[in-house]
Every structure is written in C-alpha cells, then in structure tokens.
Length: 223
Image (cartoon, rainbow, N blue to C red; front, side):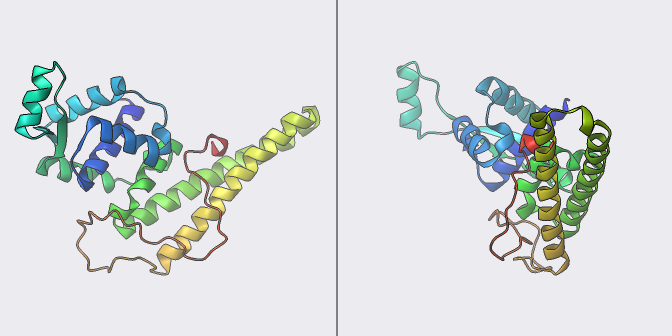
C-alpha cells in the first residue's frame, strides 16, 4: 500500500468514526476539512472504500428509505450507499491513531493526523508534535546550510524564494512550540479520566490566546 493511499484510508476511517456517510459526503468532507485531499476524485475514493469494506472495516448500507431506493431503481439511478464503521474498523483506526513513528511526522501524514487530534490520546499527540518539530528543525538546519553555501550564486528572486521557504518552516516550528507548551500545561478540554471514545471531534490542547498564526500543515511552502 502506498503512503498516499494509506493516508486516505486513515482519513476515511476517521471521518466515518464520527458518523456514517455516503461517498459524496465523504468526498466533500475530505475536500473541505483536510487540505491534502483538495484535488482527488471519486476514482480514487471508491477503490479505497471497496478495500476497507473487503477488509471488514466498513459495511455498506442503503442510504435511502425503501420507497426512495425503489424510485431510484426504476429511474435507472444508482441508490446511495452509506458507509458505516464496523467494530473491527474502529479498533483498527484506534490502532492507527496510536502510531507515532516517522511517517506520522511527514508533511501529508502529519496534516491528516493533526485533523484527528481530538480523537487522539494526549501522550500520542505529544510524541507526534515533538517528532514533527524535530523533523522540521532538521529541515531548517539543512536549508540554512544550503543557503549559506549558495547565497553568492543566487539571483535576488531565487534568494527571496529560499528565504520564504525558511520563514514558512520557522513559522510552523513556532506554532508547534505553542502546541507542545499547551499540551504540557495540561490545557486539554477533556479530563484525563474521560473515555477515549470521543466522537465530538473536539480538539484539545490548542493555545487559546489570540494573535497566533497557525500554518496549514499541508502548505507546500513548508516542505
């Protein structure tokens, strides 16, 4: 399974953990809520859904009342199918949420992981945030070293583009520092004793002060 398809499966399971949806609703949520899926088609989504159904993580259910389904059939239209997370699918998603390895720190995967931080345990959030910060600090160090070596050979516009990229990474590091500080201070909307099954989608641990600019983790300029 490719990294891209793995991220899509993770996001679909996460959205369906909140509520059952049909394909159109899923695609809309993926497009509007998760920036990394702004440009993908049903031709990408439906094979993913079929795989998840085959694995036993989703089930398909009629999405309309019986009379509406009959009317769709008579009119030659395909009846809507609603996808629902199974108990095995929920267990699998929670297992994925607990992963904190290097894949969770990469640009696209981190954006998807962050979108479901409201369903993630605080300790796991901390490890993912700290891993992401470490990865960006390494990237920033390499960018600075590269700029120092090539500065004299760059024209003004290329130099400005390099600086813009560095500033984008620096902004995300500052943002991550704020999030990590908030998590350490225990500013979580959920009680530590609250059950992990949080279907409200609330995001805990976010800084509540104003004036903070939060970069989009999927922003290409931060890569």
